[in-house]
Amino acid sequence: MSFWISRTGKGISGSAEDAFTRDFELIPNNTMALAKIASFVNNKNEYLEVMWKITSDSYKNREVRQKIKCFSGKDEQIDRALNMLKLIMDLCTFKPSHGDAPSNED
Image (cartoon, rainbow, N blue to C red):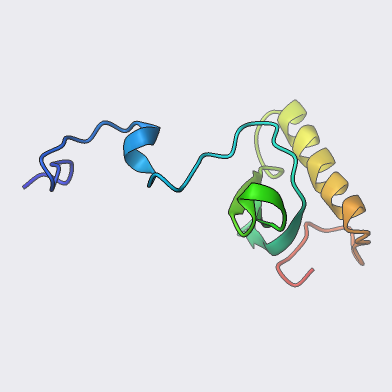
């Protein structure tokens, strides 16, 4: 049996309609909502991952992951990622105590 064979006989389409339950609506791009940081992880200096938990409106309690790829890539991409990280730190009024990449403890 192949991994990609449907167990229901319906077929595997890869469409959003078939991937999400009916009560699990996709959050549209550019949606504004209040959120808090649920976790922050340095993934072995490959990327930083922020888990946001939405605290208001119709998406309350939904979690959104954000990867900040500030360790490798094109110079412009790294600069944009570092600016995103600095923006998040400023929003949280977090001042790092060192000049290295943030650790999980930070």
